Image 1 (spheres, rainbow, N blue to C red):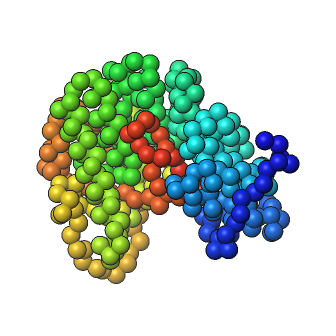
Image 2: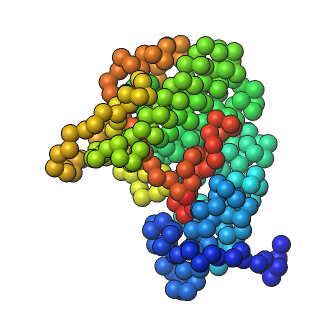
Amino acid sequence: MRDDDFVPPHLPDDVAPEDLDIGARAQLKTLTKENAELVAKHMAMASRLIDEDPELAHQHALAASRRAGRIGVVRETLAITAYQLGDFALALRELRTYRRITGRDDQLPLMADCERGLGRPEKALELARSVDASTLETPVRVELAIVKSGARLDLGQKEAALEELRIPELRKDKAFDYSPALFASFGGVLEELGRDEEAAEWFELADRAIDALEDALRPGELEEMVITTERLESPVDEEAAEGEDEPHDEAQGEADSLGDADDALEEPVVEEPVVEEPVVEEPAPAEPEGESASAIESEADMAVAGDDALFGDALFGDDLIEGEERSEGTR
């Protein structure tokens, strides 16, 4: 479609520039005021519609890109909507442009998954290895491991697919926003290997992690939530890197054990608000897959991370993870 043929979708009266995430709006300040407002409205609509009407969301993203094609978050938004539609070639092209504009690697897992979608698992693995994983934020590193595991499965390398997921974040005693997808991916590979009993244990852990995360974020359940930040380092990385303000920043609220869903949270004692320093914990090694899921009940209370991503669920992997990654501009 030529630019002259494109007709921008209608903007409803109830959409406002302020509906767009403040971080994304900040990137539009190089535009004129009128243009920035129109772009912000189209991007806000893309975020609003991404789940219920991905085709219309994509049209809004196209409208934004035609007005602000040199803004990183705009190209990122267009890539995510294209990915949702299964247009992996367009998504990959836009993500490459986003990477050139911003110099960021936070969408590397989505780029590698686009290579998988195009039937090129070897290219996906090559792209995933092009960046030192220790330089990536924890959620991005986890997503990349899941995509690499999927690429190994595409190549019929089942044992290697399991090894790709044996990362420090694969731990049974704590749940973060990336844990359900990681647990389910690990269970899925075990199932591919015919180890159904072990797979069932990890699937159960994934379900319990989801329950705990939902309980931790349920309105009215907590009058006060303690926010912590954790950066898990790979064995070769000795220093903790400070997180940046990006779509995958880790806002993690602590909650009780994944034991029983009904007892996931107890009413906290409300105290005077205090500002706590971020807690950095040493990564625990991945437990052998043969251990029972019930072992989680003998561990200390589990920390639960919550992240208000614009697009909700992650976009990576096969059927183990729903949806994308998550864009700062459209989620």
